[in-house]
Length: 247
Picture 1: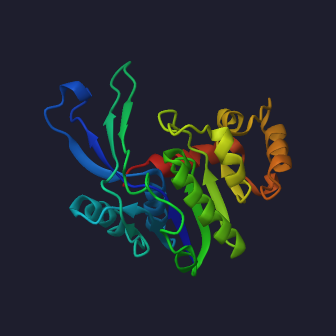
Picture 2: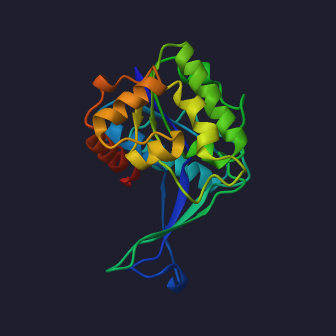
């Protein structure tokens, strides 16, 4: 039974040798994305992982999916579409200078994803788990609706669902806030990964300690059972490692 990870894969361009974006005469090119990174890490641990996204059928789109598939991830349910592959520019921090990320993903396959474009019953036929993150519904209103479609079908099929809240302050540019979109999506979740600031931002849940936070989350979202979770700080750290560790 597979663990299915759903989200956008992008082309990552980084200046070499600690240079700033404005200084770079060339860029190192790799592919990555939160959910793709999770799928690759799971496959490397010997777990049956699948990855689902929507990407253009041109060479960069095929190369992006190939970068995931070469690690043993099942990509056969990825669909082709969209005018372009999303891009993000990563300026790696040096010394006291922090890292910097610039997104260029408007009009990408996932940003223009809509309900009905992915045959979720076929995708989830052999799945035991569906993993997604708060990045996908942040891309566009149609991507948020497509996410809800996936979650509703997974829930109907009895598949466990996990979400890494994964807030990105440079996304959410289509007129909706996380608090307006995410609660109805988290209603489907069995496992939620996030830190205290994410629960506050997404759901207005503020607590001084982990036990109270878990109790409040369980009250708000009945499917999420606190006693099944590891200590929140450890869970959040693992989620961040899996989603951000490049493959």
